Image 1 (cartoon, helix red, strand yellow):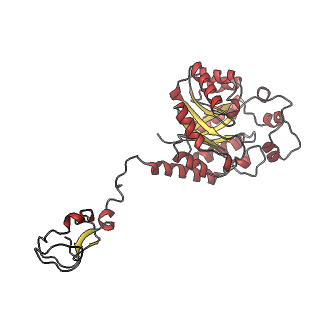
Image 2: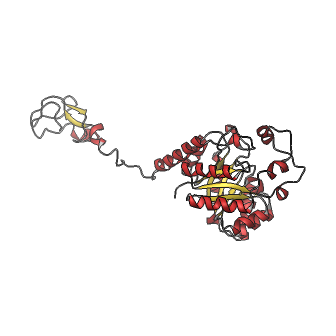
Image 3: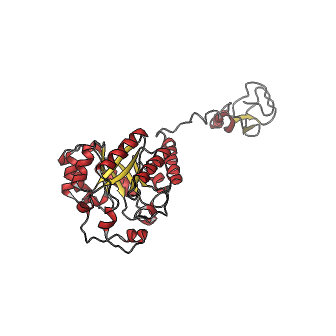
Length: 332
């Protein structure tokens, strides 16, 4: 199974269907498995007096502190979803979206999304988790801001609601945009996988691509990463997203690491086998040796090529009589 790579467009379309389609094009070119958006009704997601997070204020560069007003502009309606799904189908890429409220869960279910992505902020939302669990679909659960007890509780709710363990992938995450390197704690991803015996991966908000590559080397089966057309665009998430050339580099690196991981068997590879003869050494005559003469450390040497008697048999050869005449540098 190859690593499932989700390019997270999120709200980086800035409310424009044309920008959304351009993001899909970038995801297709990069070779990811799925492109993901966000589905919500601002009225259902935040109260009118909820303020923006610090990183949102910084990135939006506007005096309006309202989360509601920011999100209202970023909603995607049913027609837009249908158009984007159809566009993804024509480009042979999976369309995904994260629902943030019950109406959005129902809408995405009616649109027959194959996978439901639960964002970090909903991991303590029992009715929401139960609703998604009851659909019995594939589930990807992000765990930013959560501890092991909260992950266990969320998992229990999904399982009791009817989703089987084999259908659940848990993503380690850190909900800071961008995440400082010292807060990534990538080893916790493996802790999650071992503790709950489920598929695991990583949802990344760091600025580079190296942590995603490391996560794959540590066994991640799913990687999610925000991307944008341009980091300098105005919007809450652009700054902590990859630009198209970075997304392409990330996917290429992940696919290379997948190949490089190989099997657990240590043996000569197909490509290096011809070099065994060239790089290894054999026991050879260090000078002319007559038949019957005792082979010794003085008249033997160890040199390339490696197609004669292995130097690992040195102790066995020393002291035995020469079976024929040898010229200097001749293989014994």
